[in-house]
Image (cartoon, rainbow, N blue to C red; front, side):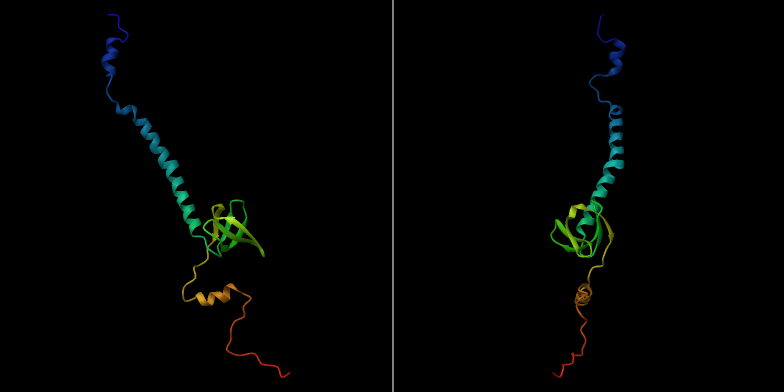
Length: 136
């Protein structure tokens, strides 16, 4: 009886059968990768997406390049105009915003008219009195 497979080993191996225990380590490794690597990364990406979609004028931001500035204008869905120093405005891709330092409050409907004078500090406040005409 010169066989390639010894009889005792051939009976124990069970060729053609499925062994769940051989797959279990692969399933456990995938579960560990999912809960410790993939899931937190997806959460962080969703938070960044929410942050970028909620940006508006007046928010103080930090770009990926390290510039700190205030959003002076939302140009489009892809671009922002950021004031990095007094009178110095640059256009920044919205995706390059790394962090939000301070958020401005949204303008309410009742305060919309009064916000014009707050935003434009050069406009004088209106009073009921008219200026006096000179006698010349």
